[in-house]
Length: 178
Image (cartoon, rainbow, N blue to C red):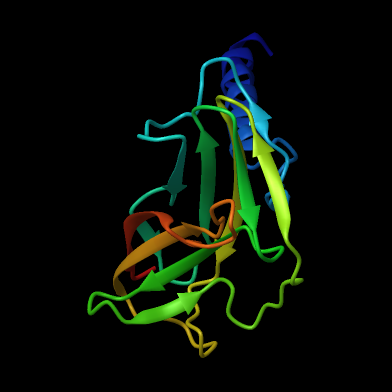
C-alpha cells in the first residue's frame, strides 16, 4: 500500500483540479448566467479604461471539431454605475468566419421580455455569463474547420436607454480536425 500512496495523492490532486475546472461538481454544466454582481476587493480580473468594461474568455484558441466551446463574459465596473437594459437580454455572442461572415449568433431564435431594467454595480463588481457553443451555425449545421472570431457584446444602454450594444470584446479560435 505504501508504494501506491504517492500515486493516490497525485490522483487526488488531479481530481481536485478537474472538479474545479468543471465547476466543482464533477462535470455538471456551467451554472446559468446571473445578473447578480460579484464583488471582490482586488477588482476585476482584467484591465479596462472607463467606468465599465467587458472581457471574453474562450478557454483556449484551438478546439477539436465537434466539441463544445465554452465562453465566459465578464462585464465589470471600476466605479459605481447603473447599467440600463431594454430587454431581459444582457449580452450576445457572435461568431464570424475568416471572411467576416456571421456563422452563429447566441441570441438567434431566442425571445427576451421587453422590459426596462436596471442593474447596479459597485466599484470592482462584475456580472458573469457562461455559454456553450456546439460548433453549429445559425442553420443548425456543423461549421467547417477553420479560424473564427468570437465577439461578446454587452447589451446595456445609457441612462436614456439609447446607445445600446456599444461595449464588446473579441477573441479568435480555430476549429481543428478531431
